Length: 128
Ligand SMILES: [Zn+2]
Image (cartoon, rainbow, N blue to C red; front, side):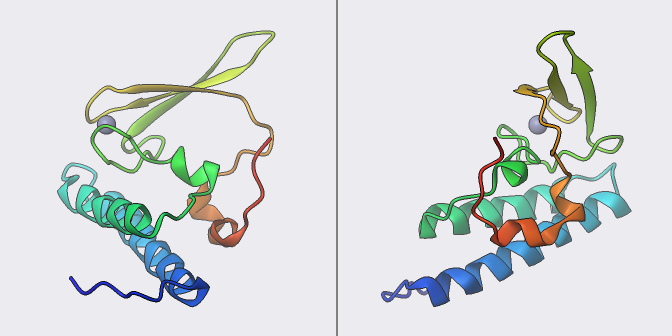
């Protein structure tokens, strides 16, 4: 793998586009064959490698959409179950159906599934 020494924001923009593409590819492979997650994991792994190498910050909505343990894209009904729990402090519980890892995070009214909003990827606003 060739490593560019002048990692400016131009390179980052290019990386974002690549990650965007990989994310869509991961989503599509999952959508097409939910029984075989290898391709999906493969794409997510490449994404992780790119973000780690270039030290890119992922949008928080984006981060929520992967399983940290097995790298599967968490899509409700396909590879994950999503439940909202708690009366006062609502929080969302996401279970990865592949490795059964459970993630919890506080309910965010503005939470959107990133895949429906690819433009979010380029925004740096934090979801508060
Ligand atoms: Zn998992």
